[in-house]
Length: 224
Image 1 (cartoon, rainbow, N blue to C red):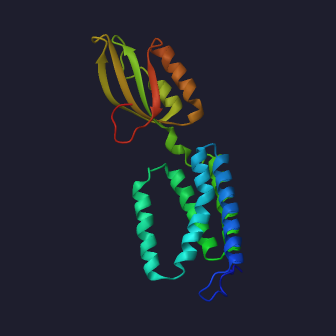
Image 2 (tube, rainbow, N blue to C red; image 1 turned 60 degrees about the horizontal axis):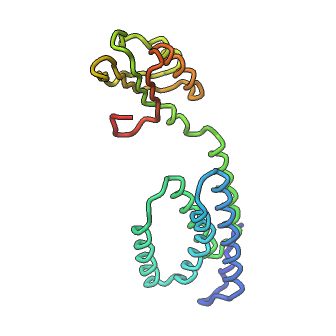
């Protein structure tokens, strides 16, 4: 079904094929940048990079054209660029790899395949971004509550936690304010992340409106 426009080339590259691949690469790079922008992230510099990356990769693939020596040289150049670059988020790395894969497809002449895969992967990225897929990780929280010293911290919030959390574990207790208050640190898992404010309001009513801090659990750290 998918065929390369470069299949009939015998060691030569026509200007028509090169320009056609370049225009398709730029167009698909623009689509990739647009898809990433619709997710509400990314700077202008990164968006421009996404537009240009497919055509740059396509140029490299066309220049290599099966030459082993050139392939090794290109691999070394890409390695230097990789180690001098600043690491990004996992989403940015995935989109960069996406753009490079499109450039690889256009560089080998599979323009139809590149276009179809851009649409398929782009729609998948948008669908996953708009859905709640993976949000269960955000429901695990670190919770710090300050209470007065006369309150019994062992059971004071049990009914609230039973109502709003599926998992609740008291990690440590620390005295503060010259021993007149306690700081309670919990690891909790919310049943419904949308009810977080309701839970915090009930805790504030129970602890006399003292400080309550709730945030995403920090991996490998004890403090919030």
